[in-house]
Length: 64
Image 1 (spheres, rainbow, N blue to C red):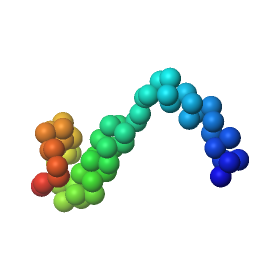
Image 2: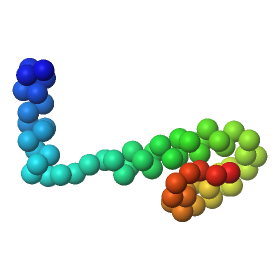
Image 3: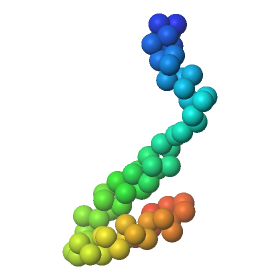
């Protein structure tokens, strides 16, 4: 474990200087992936694009 921490030491310490995270972006990508899995039945590509634009309104769950 010590060797692993030593290898990642620079990145770990840099996080304290610049606390930037990609958690929001990963959450959005997860929602898009779930929407794509649900979208197999969509006949219209434009409808799928509209659902992507409306995705930010879905706070807790993706509902049809």
